[in-house]
Every structure is written in structure tokens, then in C-alpha cells.
Length: 226
Image 1 (cartoon, rainbow, N blue to C red):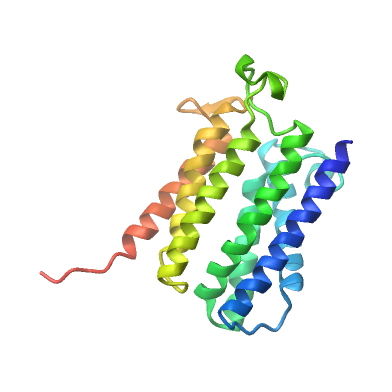
Image 2 (spheres, rainbow, N blue to C red; image 1 turned 60 degrees about the vertical axis):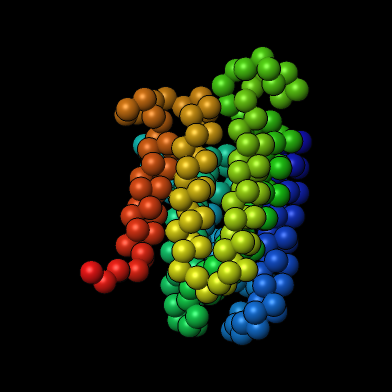
């Protein structure tokens, strides 16, 4: 069953994101050269490359398969998110309405990400440290479950911001800040070695991402005349 849960829920997550993106495009009458499915396939493939390369870099592997063998276990979500974000930016920049398209993409991707994490939860692989209070989860902290709950709260926040202004300049920064904050907390429950300041590598990345997002939001604040 190792690949069954991952494959099924990964595919379901992709379908949910594609349907969501199509819904938001129709809702706001956004025209596109590519269909939502084509867009997400392109972004996903680039993100997959980024996630695999990041795994090789994080582990300092000398085996080239760790950088290229996508069929093997070993993906770093931060690498996938970064590569997917760059691919989205470059793609939508050519089509115009950059900020609007990115905002709608976020609204579509979060539900799919949640569905994909359900596969991790059912497979019992995205687990945390030993904690006997979670006997139903092999006595491990259910990190994937906490991420799903956090993503749901982030998505609801994004919906509220969208209702106010779908083309708003604060949605992306707010979502990134909240997600990085959640990862900073839940990744502390993973069995990963501390690298600096008592934080593991994933937490350090989350801290850096959150800092950059907060600075970006602060810089977007309107200047008040004195």
C-alpha cells in the first residue's frame, strides 16, 4: 500500500486543484492560453524537479539518483513550492494580470495540497516524534493532520481577503507568512536533527521564508504623508 495512498490522493489533489482553478477563472472571467489542467501539469512538473533537487541538496547526497529519480522516495516540499512559484510567476507574467492569476492559483492549489496530505496521513509517513497521546497514529505526532488543519485555516483567510479584493496585493504575502509560520511549528515535531538555534533545516527555511514575506508585506504598506 506504500504507493496506493500517495498515488490516489496525489491524483485526487491534482484534480481538485484543476477544478478549483477552472471555477475561479470562470468566476472572475479570466482568459487563459492554457487550460487549468495544462497550467497545473506544467507547474507540477517544475515543482517535482525542484522538490527532488532540494532533497539531494538537503541530504548532501553524492548519488545522482537522489537528484533525478522521481520514482524513488525523497522529496522536499520547500523545493517544490519554490520551483512551482517561480514557474507560475514566469508563466503568468507573459499572460498579464499577474497578481490576479497568482491569487487565484493560491485559492486553487491549497485544497489540492490538503487532499494530497491526506495520503501522507493515511500512509502514516508524515509523522512526528513519539507521543503516546496519539495512540491511533502509531504513538506519533500526526504532523500531516496539523498541516491539513493549518491549510484549511489559511484557505479560509485567503477567501476572506479575496472577497475584499481578489486582485489585492496582500493575499500572497499573507498566505506565505501563515504557511511558513505553521511549518515552523509543526516541523519542530519531526524527527529531524537540529542545525542551528535548536531548529532543524526545514524550520530554518520556514523562518527565512516567513521573515521575507513579512518584510514584503511591510514594504507594501502605503506611505503616509507627514
